[in-house]
Image 1 (cartoon, rainbow, N blue to C red):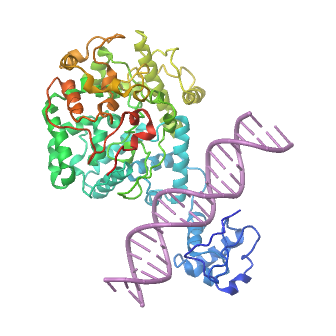
Image 2: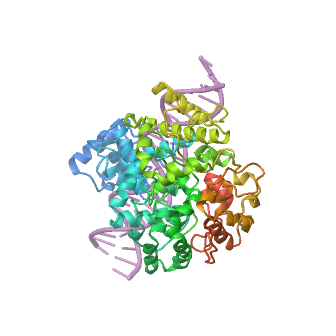
Image 3: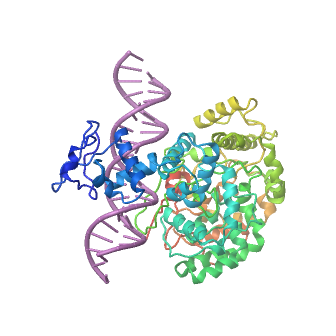
Length: 553
DNA sequence: AAAGTAAGCAACCGCGGCCGC
DNA sequence: TGCGGCCGCGGTTGCTTACTT
């Protein structure tokens, strides 16, 4: 059943080689003659073939693989010989499953390099690129099934820190930026993004803020390494410097930056209004597996590793399956990956906005299983996600007991799986030991945008009165909105609402920002990426669509 | 126990870069 | 400068094995 198609570049074999004892062991079909050349064997290698190849390499060394078939009886093309040697026969190859440390390293490397398997293999002695690639693909599938993040938070944090350290490294910047862009269907001329390095001082405790922040959108446009929207706010000056290297984007950038400038000094207000601070994770293990991924800033993990980034292309995009593929079929499923207290003022302001420094202590409250392997770490994250779900659910139900699991929470099977595993490994409550705060502002009670009329979430429909009411942080953090209340609903501040592709009117975005700030921004700050690329609301709700641009020019 | 299904992995394929002629 | 061969990389295929029904 092996493929019998000839390889175009390795089909020539001298006829006398047909007499080789390994030429036909009956284990596989041979390639048909083409142009008079004898067939080349394909399929699994036999031990006899291995021995021949090993012997040849011992005598002649590696390289010149096409000579192997000429100098030995192997009916294998040079490429096949090289592959066999590199992946299975060469000495010092490490066999067996990856260790936890290797797994961690792979994840970390992938967050930096993307699908550069060979480069990753260079960091893993004894491991082959093919092995790593297979492992990663398997891992992605596993994570998809379990609804878990591709990148464990600890790796994200570490990579994030290292990103900052290697900010001056061209390879770190240029490759990532291009990979990231290409992975998202964008192409930009090469440029270094050193200027876009995240301000680690600004949000060291919120590496995942980019998950649903404007910076994701901007980042995809700028190839920015910025961590968050507020990072970019803090670095608007730097962004402006990019004009020289980003002429094609300067208009868009400036449009955004201009807006950013206007409220850069009012970032707290914006954070409160937008609810970005909900994304500041008191518990860093909780993260948003949002459509834009957002695990690592300025890296492939930036998109949670869901996108192929192997080579630049300005053509049609081919993307890897997102890690949360199942969200595509379930318009509500994004809720499974958003962890959030509801728009609960008292819970939002203090731990997130005003006391970010408390994060480490909160984080430490979570018994992290990280020392015991990545799977547990993922489970731990799922645990934390669930914790956030419970948290927000309890808020919704007006429960005063923070962190108390809510029985009414509807959990996905993946969570059940994780819970089972967790409880097996860590006797005791599945969730209770986790920090009470996590996640963003999206609640399980919040209907997904895609499931509702897009108009519902059009920010342009927010009345000026509502806009005014959002003018101050105090008001934003005001009383909960009751059902039927016409006051601004947190849903209105969902990024998908903000960047709805249905928002044909460029002023909508401006209005949104204006509403959030209580200002009247007249600057055209259209949420476009590059030239006319916009997101639609369904992209937000449906993970696989998140990376699809409604337009690509 | 058999059939069906899913996961893991080895190997193949196409493409592009490099180098020598 | 163009051409062809060699090599390496990343994506894809499909076989094998394990698991489920």
